[in-house]
Image: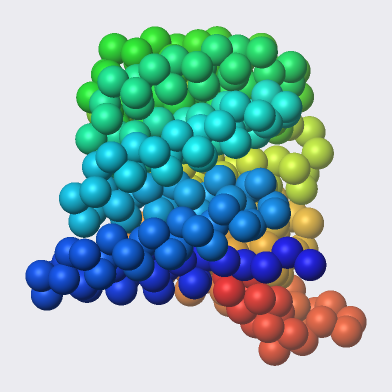
Length: 295
């Protein structure tokens, strides 16, 4: 059985930080020492990795930079032992962000470079594009904007090579969001436009619906509400054509996120009309399904 240690270590970290606030630095350090001892006994390597990062960042917050660095080194050793390229790249990226948080920017940069090397070895283009986009965002967080931009360009190059139109659009939407996060709004808009074009070419209606929904939500995230609304209109038309009340309700909720309450209301009216016309499908059941979807 896998035990969730996160709550326990959250509590110990909070206690340590509270000790610092009342001037009890020694007790703060002792509390985190205890947490690290417990972490060393965790058998699941992925859990241990996560907990050690958490403890390292907490050491830094109470001024114990040396212990923070030593603890993060242990987490780095676990990351280096991971065999799967996608998981290893992600773990190293996380380590790099932790190095940045504890003030070791040089190690953060070195670790991201290693993560980038590992990401380049990922076989599946879809996974590779996501990994590179994440690394690009991490580069931006540590102030290496040029490397962030170069890494996203590589992610984009990989994404456009994906043959499946659905996976292609998803990857491009993700990259667009990454461009927005690193301050490249024009590139974000261009990339999302490309994702929308490819989504338009999808022939399978249900796949097209979910891709359009994703693209619309990405438009919201990059601040282009008008284009989000237009893309949601496309998704709504598909849901109406397929007579899917639950999907219409999902679209309605997304309309509210961009302030299109009138469209949301009209879409829910249509969803109810379709639900009432279907045997065995009540509006109450539909609402239950929506609630479960958004919990």
